[in-house]
View 1: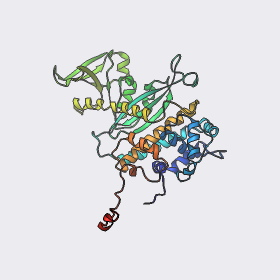
View 2 (view 1 turned 90 degrees about the vertical axis):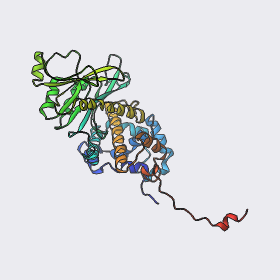
View 3 (view 1 turned 135 degrees about the vertical axis):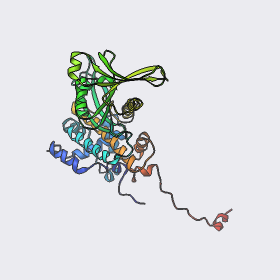
View 4 (view 1 turned 90 degrees about the horizontal axis):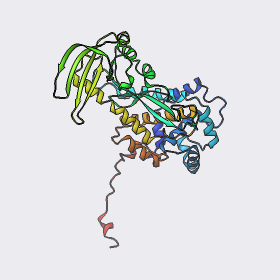
Length: 384
């Protein structure tokens, strides 16, 4: 069977070119550009992500060595200086828009069947990516450290990155909470670093729900005890109100408090939520699902290039992280639409050495069965 696309082309097939070019026009991405268009830059950076290129020089050398294979991928050899200049000057918002467009497509692919609860479950968290302050002096995080933060909303039912923002490391997670938790009729689960009662009340006012851990210094009074036990997983379920003046002003409504006991580690966890409909066990299970975002951060740091960077400017770093998120979404979409059961890690490992091969990602793991060739008995005996 002949193919007119390559593995790289097949991966990028779900990226809407029209949406990308619209973003390029909006941010003047190709203005006065002669050799490397913004879409070519995206393809080159996707190639660098999938091959785990250590530097821009390695991308340049790798493309030059494979110059005879680039035509069918729609790629071109690129000079290091051209690529560095593009990372410096192309607006990173173009790639953010491309990510958001893919996220909208992923939402359509996921659908609504398979959700565990009536409301969509969303996991909110952030991860810090450390940088050398001497080279990245715009990213001051501590006195001697630099960093950027990736703030993420992960779909808790289908486990794809739905929304993201990137900031310098000095921006606290709670400051990005409003942009990540602005939709209605959703369940947001987050750790206690996001406990800001004013922002939690905004979630309440938007007809959404939150599940998080209670801070140890929370000043509250019990309004009603719903359940209490010294044994079992659920130790306490009740309704409370904040006592302090600031607390009452920030969150004037009652809050549900649940105490869950982890038998494995013999430890109690105290959750707060504004959801009074789900059972205490379901609320506890919702918080357990928060671990999925930690696994996603671990996966993307181990399998894509977001810990070492090809440029030192803020724009270059942000572009590289956005492209990594784009690759993660593209792989997720392919896995779902084409029914690929192997892990995303195995897909990346297979693509590293077959990226210029003609074919599809699915065919890397599910080869079409070759027709059996009848064997003549007479030929078997000839020559023996």
